[in-house]
Amino acid sequence: MVDYKKVLVDWSGFGVVTANPEDVLYHPRVVFQPRMVDLMSPDPDGRDPWSRFLHYVYEYRGDPAWRPGQPASLVLVLDEAAILCPTDAHPTIRDIVVSGRGRGLSVWASSQRPQKVFSSLLSESTHVLAWRLKLARDRGKLESDLGIGCDQLRTLPDHQFMYHRSGSDGWAGPLIFEP
Image (tube, rainbow, N blue to C red):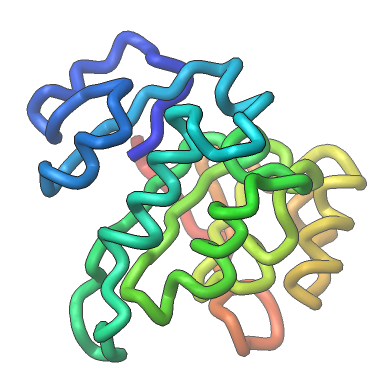
């Protein structure tokens, strides 16, 4: 889990909460809390904590011997992909999104602004859940990356969402999320 916002959530029951990227090498569950400056301006040599975290996830937590049907070797959860996996994403997060599945790496990401997200994060997704999207730019990005119409997302009521599975012709739903 990557939690750059460091909101007042008690993650201690989930795993190790840390700003130290090396902790992902030694603990099964880590909530990594990078600094915003490292996300926005990573070191070109990859020495900053965000770059090191991504490197460790891809090179050491990913398993080149992983095969389909096995459990994921790691699930990387990105809360707010517009910040953590933007259109000009860090090269290693691009590698994780594009080729991480072959190493047993799964990415679960959320974003309120799909327009600002690295296209492969959407186009390579097996499952997409979408709530109401008011902005035409955001719906257009989903249409372009998923290859399906998204007009029905403009008027979804509160707590309702649509579901798309890769390879299907459109959306299923609306479905209801009951908080």
